[in-house]
Image (cartoon, rainbow, N blue to C red; front, side, top):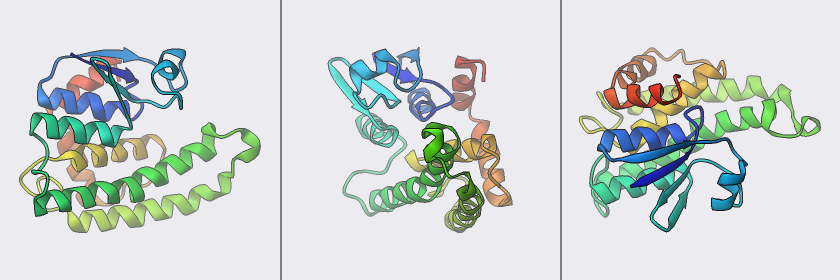
Length: 197
């Protein structure tokens, strides 16, 4: 059985959602970054952490890719052109949505106050909006890669939810509709109930 350390208000949501989509049994251990339990598993203190037997995996994207490959679902086959496109899309979302949101969070509450630059946030919001429009142009529907839900869908939907919470613009109607559809998935709803989100 898998163990997931983190919280549903963090990137751990992605891992929990993946496990729900896969129908896998897991134990959810709610904890915050830098919790002593987390540091014992991951010296950086970052969440999520996935434990499988004696193995400890970190980084939500790496965990999602591992689970998808292991269970042969929510992914295209390694070595295929479709997988290359999937991986490119995953990295694009991490670079252009996730990284922008994370930079805003760091300058809002993560970094020590004397190192925060709140003036950067309007620029980040503009960048996020522009990048979201680019992603919308790539949406093949109903999922990002057409008829198959893949790892990038989990990351993109999580980023869109994160953006709403961070008061970032999600004005692209195509992407807003896409995210609303993804939120209706039963696996997504089950994760939201874990912490009463």
